[in-house]
Length: 127
Image 1 (cartoon, rainbow, N blue to C red):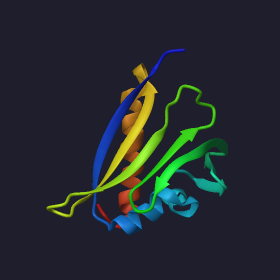
Image 2 (tube, rainbow, N blue to C red):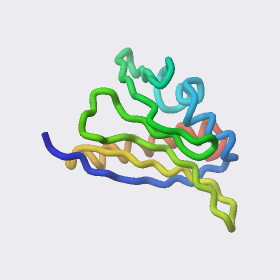
Image 3 (cartoon, rainbow, N blue to C red):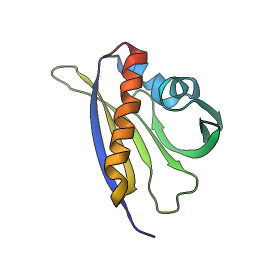
Image 4 (cartoon, rainbow, N blue to C red):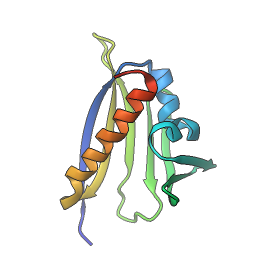
């Protein structure tokens, strides 16, 4: 198995950290932009796209700051994290994504995040 490559993306989001956190940390919020439907039972989130399910375990979260999850089938230590960063001077709010992908799939994974965050911005009215 090849090692996955870590990549990071940053998106400026015109919304409060409190509101943004609801969209990255709750099943109802994630269902609005990340997947067709999201359910959670305890620390396990089930993401549904076009009838297929993927399960992720919540590794860590801090209110209004970040959520860190790992796909259940991953045994390589990879995870994905959505972190809210507020610039201390400008007060601009950014969503900082950390994820992993196979070397030949990094560009595709980045494009997928860009599309999903574009959906998030539309939901938030932050275009």
